[in-house]
Image (spheres, rainbow, N blue to C red):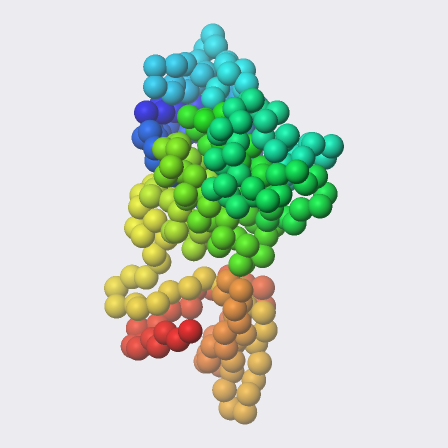
Length: 280
């Protein structure tokens, strides 16, 4: 069990105040708007920043009024958006730099499909391959806590899906408690068993992915959030072009809505009487 009760002033307008418990082996996703304190929270857990309060992991105190355990003594793995690999070392050497556990190194290379690339240098790898190396290197410590700060955000959709499965495989195999910052709803739903939403340095929602992320209400069947890209008049009707995820949708709106809605606004698109058809 991880017990956290911390307070940190990030800037004059934002103070991070968190009190929570994280169960051993849990996969916790953290989401929310930019500037809500998500990355700062991970950095505090990693020991890269200090705060007032207490962090206890099992029976070990990582932070209190008199103690701040150094990052290298916290038994964590940290994966950033940037790969941060040693450019002059091969894939295998990058892993073994953490610890000389050759058996674990080979196991991780096999699990992540990197076995045939183990002698390659980072500059010869694709972005997805580099992130796999970064993830495996973080697991070389057999960390109690794995921290993922939007590790897949720079990758294309197909590669993201592949690495999501690898993250889940490693999480389950090693039983590591995992915290992941992400803005990708499908990624969170697929990987996490618990979701927290941060807003202005505080937790405003905490629950299962379904209870936190599913935004339908009443008799609504579907509800999506998107951005208005354009509003057009087509014959006698008005149509809003809305970006939802990686897709564009045309939504018929009234003349009154056309007057009140603005390009660039975030809107929620929902429907009640709707029979969906799923096709491949």
